[in-house]
Length: 339
Image (cartoon, rainbow, N blue to C red):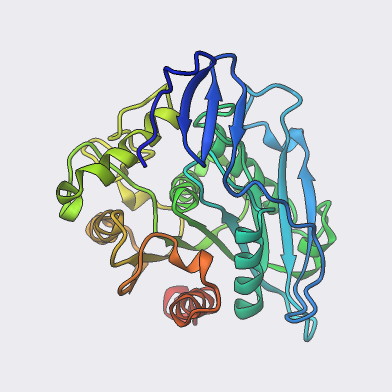
C-alpha cells in the first residue's frame, strides 16, 4: 500500500499503515521490526554477540547533533578455532533509513548466519533513523562507527573483541538496501585522504542497494505504483535535499562525484531478479567499471526472488547461496590485488 497523509485524524501528519506513523507534534510510532533480541551466545553456531555504545567524542563528525545523541552497535564474534585474526565486517542494516535496527530478530539472525559462515568479526551499526534524525544523520553516525572501529587498529582500543580478534588489513563494509546505500557512501568518504581514516577498506558488499533517480530505468516505468512507493522515501528521510538525483541516493547521476574515488579495492553487488531496484544495482557496477576505479567489481544476481528475500528465509537454499557468496568475498584470495 502506498503511504499517505491522513486527513481524517487531525493529529496524524503522515502514515504508512503497519510501518510508521508520524504525528504533527513530532511524535513517531513504528510498527515494523521493533522487536529486540537480547545479546547471547548461540548454542548451535557458537556465535557470540554483545552491545556497545560508541562514545559521543568518537562522533565528532556530527557536530550538529545534541550531546545526548549516541551511536550504538551490536558486535558479533564467531566460535574461535585458533588465535588467528579474522576479517572485520562493518555492517549497516536496511529499513529505508527510518525503521529497524541491529537488535531486531531479522538482522540479528542474519548477521549471526553471516558471521558463522564467513568466520568474521562484525560490527552492526545502529544509526539514527528519520524522521527524528533525517539524512545525513545515518551517514554521520555510520562514519563515527567506522572511526570507532578503526581506533582499535593498534590493539589498544576500548573493545577487547576488536583488539584481540580483528584483522585491520581485511576490513569490509556491507549492508542491505538502505544499508547498502550507506556502505557505498561511507566508501566514498573513505576514499578522501583528508577525512583521515587510519585504515584502508579492502572491500564493500552491496546487497540489493537502495539507489534511485528521477528518470525511470529498466522495468521501473512498467510499475508506476511500485515506483511511486519508492519515490516518497527519499524526500521523507532527507527533507533538506529531497531531489532523488542527489548523489547520496543516485551516485550515477550527472554531476555526482566520480565513482573512481571509491575508497576500496573490491566490490560485490548483489541484486535480485524481481527487485525493482535491480537495474540500479546493475547500472552502479557498469558505471563503476567505466569510471577509472582501479579495483575489481563482481556481481551476483538471484533468480526468481525479490528485494531482501534472504532476510526472511535464512533456511532457504537461495539465501544460503547468497550468504556463501558473501563469505567467499570476505575471505577471497587478494593476492592479485596486493602486487
